[in-house]
Length: 169
Length: 417
Image (tube, rainbow over all chains, first blue to last red; front, side, top):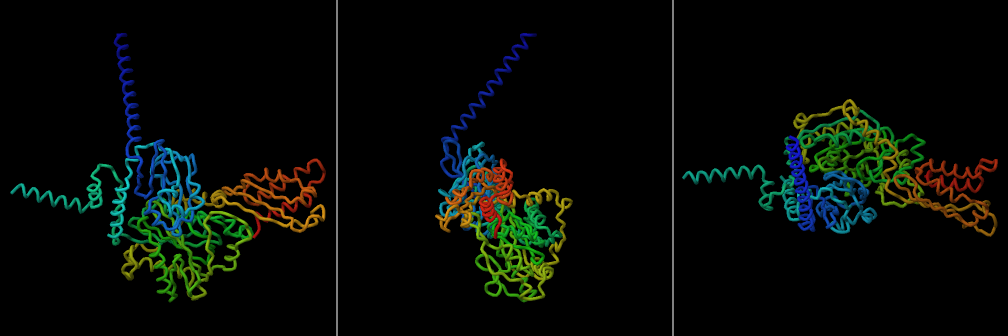
């Protein structure tokens, strides 16, 4: 009887260990696949934000060409402070243009590591250099797999096409 | 035979699918991947949208702003467009990213008990009293159309009062070539948008210009500046215009216009809408509104949300405070501060040598005691206290001439027009 119980315990331990191992192996594999997959390209959300993730899992967020065009001249940028925890889709600041104050949403989850102080001083950078100097903030991604829910540039272009079509029907 | 029938069936079936989900199919064909890409919401056609005119029963600026915010957060405007009309007791409303010390005459507001509020939308500072009609247009984000809203107002002015107006490139409504009767601002989010504006009917123009007076301030900031314009009251153009008659005129114009394009759809269209409704912005009607209102009344929101700024001013030192005649009248005391979140962060005092030689030593205490204080008279009180504590040893608990001079200069930095 005791022996039986002992055997049972051991086998249970083994199984759970194997399970843990497996899942950690899976995690590592995932990480590797993120590191070497297409993360060097910008990913776009349906609300016209872009995010570019580097090898250290830090994402740089900005708004697309289309978004800055429809906003018009940005006159003020209110950006999230470093340390702020964000979930994908969270409201995390606002851009004020001559037309309206528009909310900024984070395309992915993570912790803000930096905001673009240059843009705070010169919001016009968002219009003149939307994919480069006009970035808004950086964040450490907590769920890098969310990148899979975003569009690549080509898909985003197509999305814009259908969005425009929709507006005219 | 059966095969071709089958093929035909499949083809028609596919057409139906393609017709129904044109956007999805286009995307999946193009990308040929199974990645879940978010769809933009398909909005109902114009004929399915009905319209309401809400008339707020509150005249409190914070309550009305909370009402706007509540509707913006909680209501779905995809098949229901709403125009809310509201008016307020005297107040000054600044834009979301503005500096109240730069835009409004804060001491004057205090004296006249005029409220100061910061709204959520962008744009510049406006003055409201019972002589203003405020209008907010709510729509789905994708159907936000400022031109349409302003056009409704323009048409109502003409249809009911024969007043001709035009909409300029800044989207202000202008009469008689240059006089502004309306400012405009908006807020957009993922799903909802609102556009609001205020119309001058018979506002107190004297108070308006005093409340918005610019001062000799020396403030440097990246906050959104206002664009001052010459204004006129609509009642001065035609005495039939009152806040009530204008509200009715614009309300009917809104209801007789189709939801997505400007056209007069006539009286019959009005009867198909949801009409005028009184709304009472209270917690009973709108749970959660009290909390929103409370937030809007806090110092942290109204003043503390001011984008960082620096202020620097110089004051000539009166010759009688200087120790010797060696120093000419060019001696100046310079006070510079950076203010973050409405709180004083960094202070630099540039004390002319003449003042130091005559025995002023307050510099260090001034600087350390001001940090973290609100950019208001609170900071002045802290400064005076700090200087007084140095007199502890002696019997005289009174500021000397030089200290009084520094305090007076400081008062001017935080309080004057």
